[in-house]
Structure formats: structure tokens, C-alpha cells
Length: 185
Image (cartoon, rainbow, N blue to C red; front, side, top):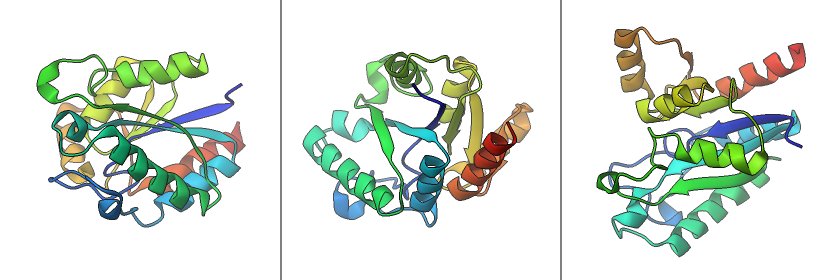
């Protein structure tokens, strides 16, 4: 049984994003403190999953085997810091394919809910883009914005919309807050 589920976006939250896409394991670089944050979440009893748009597959910039290798590098980095990413959900489709899994649609989050047989109400969903937050809002999850990646631009957009979103400097700060909340429960 899943005690505490937390869903993370990948690019811009765990690792540095690239306008040219992260197309190889060599291009995948963790944001400072992110692997340690996942380690802390794991040690605090959270089940950590990733839900990530990976349209580079659909654009034929890299294949699913390369994506699996990139994710293997990410998993190993997280393991070195005592963390576990229990499962990775990803959308390989291009934006023009109108799939149900590409964020801001909630398909990836719904897949996670089905996989773990849990409600997503108030489950933390941590992202750096409006599409991450919109997917969280769609399933009544707990949207959390980090200011890494596209986070600064997203924070400005949220302020203009007057939407209620928790905002943290990075994944490490968000993880600390979640762990503190968990201990207080």
C-alpha cells in the first residue's frame, strides 16, 4: 500500500531542462539538491513517481530505448542519495497528436492513480510549468511549483491568474516542506 504518494515532473524539477530536449544520458544533468531531495522523501516514507511529457520520442529526436537509458541514469543518481523513483510515467506524443496523456491533460496522473489504486485528491504534484499545475488541478491534487526550470515564468502567470499554488525555490525546499507536513500529521 502507498502511504504518501508524490508525483514529480522531470525536466526543470529533477534535472536541467533544454529547449533542444534532453536527448541522451550525457545531456541529463541533475539540478543541485534534487537527488538528495528524492532521497529524503524516500527515507520519510514517500512513494516518489515521475510523470513527464517526453515528446522528443514522438518527434523522433530519440527513441524509447534511449529514454530508458536516460531514466536509468536518473534512477542511479537518485539511488546514490538513498532515493527511489518507484515508477516513471511518460507521454511520448507530440503536442499535435491530441493524446490524453500529455500534460496539461491529466492522463499521466490518472495512470499513476490507477497503478497505485489511490485517489489523487491532495496528492502533491510538483512541477515547473503551467501544464504540470493544470494537470494537478484537473484531478484535485495539490499543485506545487518550483522556481527551477520554467518556474519563474510560471510563477508570474499564476500571480496574474490568482490561482492558489504553493511555491518553493526548488525540489529540495518542496521536499523539506512535505516531510515537515508529514511529521506533523
